[in-house]
Length: 149
Image (cartoon, rainbow, N blue to C red; front, side):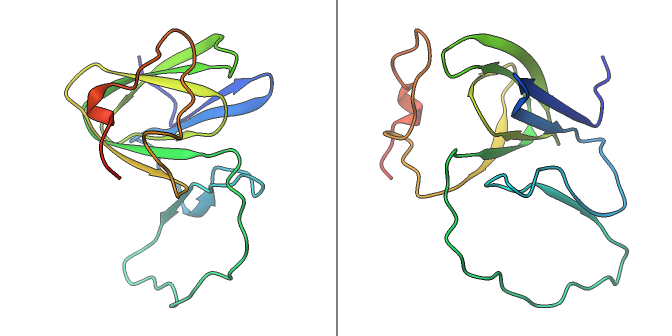
């Protein structure tokens, strides 16, 4: 099955997740998220020699509700399942090497289908021990996720 370059997972009109597939290509700069979302995901395609001037970002208070996260699949194959916060399952997909996924709303789970390496970006501060709400029957965070911050 060949996936589209961008897949969106909506529940009752709310974006729960977006995958930018490894085969995505475009021109210039574009953002995939709405300006109102607390985490922006964009793409740049620039020619050799193109320069972006040195700059800072204006300081402003940025709320982090809800917490969004982005995962980049360095290697492997991962099944991602999407759930409403009440625990209702509604979709699943597979992400592979080179894919990027934005997790915006609702709940999600992962199953590593192969040995996998992922980079994760989310707003901080964040505690891997105390900042997760477990949905459904799973009540324990696996031991490998419990570590000192």
